[in-house]
Structure formats: structure tokens, C-alpha cells
Image (cartoon, rainbow, N blue to C red):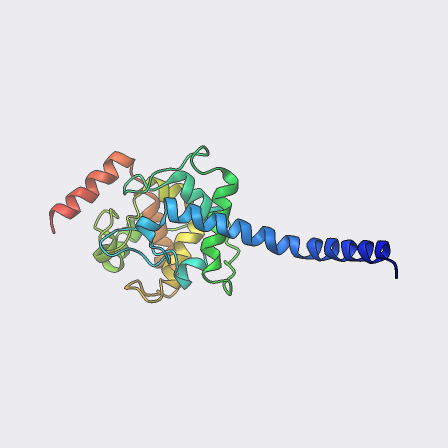
Length: 220
């Protein structure tokens, strides 16, 4: 075989290998970018490993119960809507472009690649908010606050949370809990629907939610 044929064969082989490996190189590059964006914008509150930072009130992202119900759409919506009742700003597209927001979601997903989020619908949950208030006080208020303003648990009266979470997400959060935390899983029942209906009445304006949170801190 002459040199030209060897060169052509070698070049073709390298091209084929490059084409085969390109998707994995691209994926690893996106994951790396997601990791960098997460470190820059998220890790100081949610922790480098997504398991939280001691003394900082922020959702634990690296949790089986959370990852089973948090779709990529929920994660990117949370980035956009922030949590105005707390310390999480709403990141605009200039700070975190859409593509970068997806990379962050993919990076969060990479902690538990064995978990595929449940296909939750946007169907509203029908319940009795008045009855739900009583159930909330009984089951949830000790951690999430009497007015859903947060305590040892996250604030559930936050406008950013309500803009990001579907009724089904809230319901599944209650029935699946957060393994490894104080939030246990409660059996599915009409009472849970009532709690969801009640929580939807607590979507406070950001300023009001902040005042509720400050009042709770002052009582401690």
C-alpha cells in the first residue's frame, strides 16, 4: 500500500472516530458549562453537591424525592422566577441565557442519572381550601410556617415558587416527601388535594412574603 493510500485511510479513520465521539464530547462540554454556571450562581446557597449549605435556607436539590418530580421545565422556570420571598434572585436571560439554564438543569440531573422525573401534568388539583387550611396547620405549619412563610422548611407562599410549580408538583411533593429530611411522605387522599388548594391561596406578593418571613425569624 503506498503512502497516499495509507494517509487517506488514516484520515478517514480519524474522521469516523471524530464523528462517533462528537456527541459525547459535546455532551461533556455542556455538562462542564452547566457545572461552571451552577458554581457561579447556585452553589453558595444550594451547596456544591446540591445538598444545601448549613445555615442557609434553600431547597435541597440533590434529593431523590425532589429529582423524581422536578422536570427540566420546573428547574429552568425556577431560575427565571427566582424566590423573591428569599434570597434567590430571578435570573434574566442576559445573566443566564436559555441554553445555559438548560445546562444547569442537566448538571443537576447528572447527580442522579438513574432518576427520570415523573411525567406530571398541568391539570389543576381540585380541593377545598378551607379544609386544607386545617390540614396544613396540622401537618405542614411546624416546618413551613403558619402562613407558609417558611421555617426549617422552604417558604410555600413565595410567588416565584407558585409561578414555577404545578399543582401536581405540589401534590407529589407531599405524597412522596423528601427522603433523608424531616419531610415524610403522606398517603394520597382528598386531604392532600385540600392542602394544595389552600397553598394556592397563599401565593403572596414578594414584599408581603418577605415580611412574613422576617416576622417568623424575629420570633425565634
